[in-house]
Length: 221
Image 1 (tube, one colour):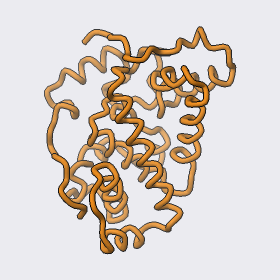
Image 2 (cartoon, rainbow, N blue to C red):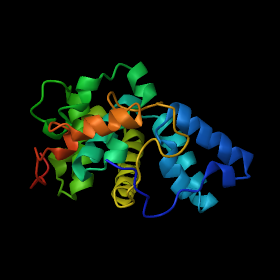
Image 3 (cartoon, one colour):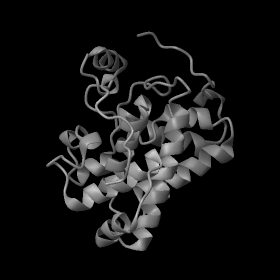
């Protein structure tokens, strides 16, 4: 796999004079989610760069809802829309809260999986309904309100909507990891820590984005 240019060019860090933007890109390289490549595209418009950086900080990394649940919802979206750039990242904070790699592997089968508890399944059903534009009913909302407060439902719903829109956009851009501020592996999934590792993992016939385990759901469960 060759390194191919993105559909919208990266703004190179050497061309950025704003020290705050450079510091944020450095944080992205060290901590990820987001990694620096997507922010290097957004850097064409500083307002877009900061809008996303601030939203991601305030709603994903911080906020009132359980970060680990938001991380599972994020990867559910990645696997649903096949955004490989986002799907090959992991939240360092979620790992510190007990999320392990196996937790990412059955998300598209979450309702039947023994890996997730009732609260996680409710959140993932919410992410599913938003991602696939499913109809919802009183039973669906009663399920959500059994596990989450209304402020939590606002935050999770907003977060899923933001990440879904961003991922649907990013998957069109042909961006890839290890192209901006290369040499760091903050938040990269196992097997994607370097460019060479990434190529090997993507060539594996069991690579997640090559699987078609689930088609669009017909109704919310």
